Image (tube, rainbow, N blue to C red; front, side, top):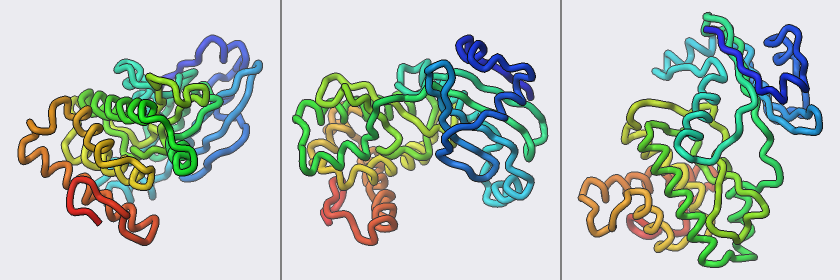
Length: 275
């Protein structure tokens, strides 16, 4: 399968001759490099971009994933399809500047995705750490919860799940601190999945990841229940027994994640028995 797209500003800035090879030869400040993938920041004509280049994961990795009953991620296609999907559903994310894929051998397919750099931002993971010494206004905290719930609801209803749905993958522009409403940007879409309908187990996995990453952020029981109400789109009094059980499962799935990272149980639980 062969695809190639390069936005006009990058066409002018890069002036590629052998376009695909020239993109794969780009270099810059490396942020991650593993399993045939490289992520880095580069600049052209005063503009900063992020590049994710895939050089093929090899048959060993392909077979290992298949043995674990998992479809291997062999290219950057996942990422650019997920970005376009989120854009179509009014969910803040990265802005595509280019993408491409060539080859049919799943072990050696080459691909890339280029995005504009999201500048002057803070991740929600970093932001909530500041709240212990500098608590936000109740209005701003509610605005964050509202946008997180909206993004999660729309994403899942539209058939997408993230698979790494943590606070660290939501970015907020620094000039939006304490302003409402907020606009968050969801990043790290490498493992995202797209279907016509998001299976319940993948909704649970995403929500458990988000809940785990927010456990030490100082959110109250009322904050968590507000998120649930906004996510389900109805009063909590109208939840069926199966829906209530689902949220208990979200919490139970989040607890081992917390224990694995912090070597202890969370201080408080909100859907089941308090810790």
